[in-house]
Amino acid sequence: MNNESKNTAYFKLVISGSVNSGKTTFVKTISEFDPITTDEYATEENVKVLKGQTTVAMDYGRRTIDEDVVLHIYATPGQERFNFMWDVLVEGAFGVIFLADSTDLDSISNTKKIIKYFSEKFNLPYLLCVTKLDMPVSIDYKEVLKLIDKQDLFAIPCNTTQKEDVRTALIALLSLAIDKAAAQT
Image 1 (tube, helix red, strand yellow):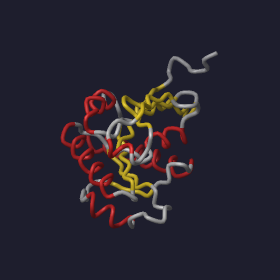
Image 2 (cartoon, rainbow, N blue to C red):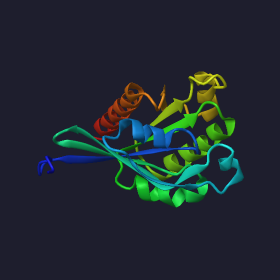
Image 3 (cartoon, rainbow, N blue to C red):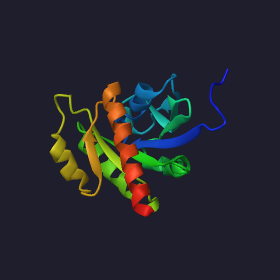
């Protein structure tokens, strides 16, 4: 039985970033059910090196904040050739969280391009989460921020396997969205 009232507010959040940056893991960590995924075998050589399967359309999860507030979470594919899905998924979103994999210079560069793509097309609150900082081969957090080179983008470190880190990211983006809405009124 559905416990939601007629007054339930639904919010849409998009998670984006390069391949293997932790988008699917982010959704799995925060979703109240096993997320719906669209993973397929990787066909691009540079993706095959990173992982066997990759998201080709989206990942979807959901988090009920309280009985009247529900968050729908969509993760985009990381390859630029799927950017049409970025446009579809961002429709109606209140904000976007970008993930940058601190262990991979190509991933950081690709995430920088994704950030540019979104920020040129959509006027939304954005948050950058630097992932995999706990790995021995990670690049220093401050160095990743220099490589992304977007000073107006709020950023935090985030281990996408840790509920508290993912929760912190959600709260940070919500705060940015509230601040942006207040500034526009």
